Length: 315
Ligand code: GDD
Image (tube, rainbow, N blue to C red; front, side, top):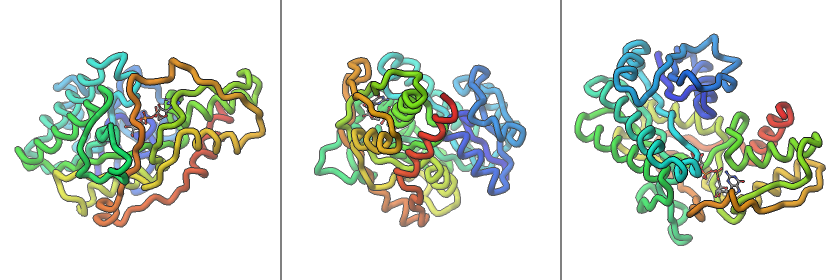
């Protein structure tokens, strides 16, 4: 089976590519000329890379012609929430237009496509609304959240208008080896690994530690993404992908610190605070579990240990 992964050089893209290869699929992936290939170093000879700017409709058309995919996993996006305040226009343009170009290139075909939405779409969630079901109101708190709501609605519309086989997912936070260093789990792990090697004074810089997030290991997430297109989910419908557990960011930091012997001071860096932060994201995964039988297998403690070891080998 031919599969196409947009954003194959990214954190999730690289893990999904490995998983698809393990299932015997022929993997194509789009990337941009400036994307570093470090995440796919070990598999770059086993996958077919297509240099493609997804905001260019003609390039997307050609990529689809080259890959002839039966399944498409659309992961490419500007995915860091703080960047979306600094560059709202880029975030909205990239995230929405890339998906629009993909839909236009495949509409009328039998191709199946998964759209990677986000729990950030829920945004302002009140404690009594948790765990969050797919029916919860969408109240995004960042331009990134708005871009993901738009992607989600566009996917719904293309299913209704053209009967496109599209599955919408709203993944909650995920992490693991190769996580970009700007994201909190990776950032803290890298700081701790740097302190262990004496490359940074024993001070961990942090932002808002009171936020609560629902984390799943990336290796569980990519298994879920694969299952979305297996036929058990309803085209046009939306599914939360999450663990159902919720940790404060403080607990994430404390767990990482408990895996190390270093003594550190924790210091708030005002630069790391956001104009508005989503206070709590704790998902309900029953709908997806009921459809596919999926459930996460890797505990967050193990994920954080793997992530810290990943950074220990790299700093
Ligand atoms: N990045 C970062 N750095 N975040 C920090 C820090 C820090 O030093 N200190 C505290 N935080 C808090 C943030 O304010 C936020 O509440 C939480 O840690 C998680 O931040 P991120 O790791 O940047 O992730 P995110 O929750 O904003 O977004 C991620 O999850 C979404 C799904 O809910 C991203 O992966 C998105 O692309 C994804 O859609």
